[in-house]
Amino acid sequence: MNSPVNRLDRGAGERGEAALEAPILAVALLLLLGLIVFAGRYVTAQNAVSEAARAAARAASIARDGYAAAGAARTEAVRVLGRQIDCAPATATDDSTPTDRPPGQPANVTATVACVVPMAQLSLPGIGGSTTLIATWTSPIDRYGQRTRRGGTP
View (cartoon, rainbow, N blue to C red):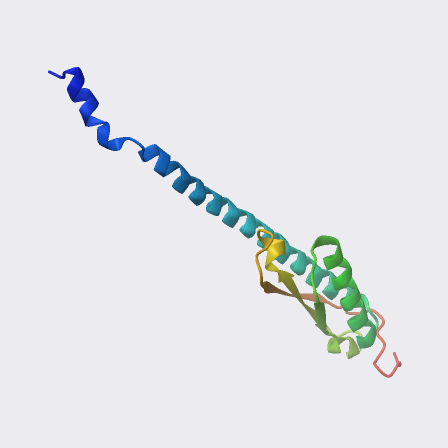
């Protein structure tokens, strides 16, 4: 049978294991939590850049000529990014040459937005480096809308 002495002897080698396991487990859980926060912030920032590209393409598709389209795309991208994330420098390019086509022909305009985001904004403060987020969006131009050619003639 089990005597009181035998029961005490069996657990003697396991003393203090909980004191060692707890800090290791805590560090692992904090790293996992940090990774989850980073992933969430990264997805949010990428969505903001995608939204800026969509808004830039839409603004360019409404413009009457290529020059106005390029300006409207840049302005809209900077406005949308300014509301959602700290992005330096934000660049917006668009392919607005389809606005030179005569009315009645289908055309699309494409806007690409690139944003350099500091890693400290995505993860924990104090982390260095940066990452570039890029999004491209295409929007149809109104087929029968009035367009002005680059020379100023309709």
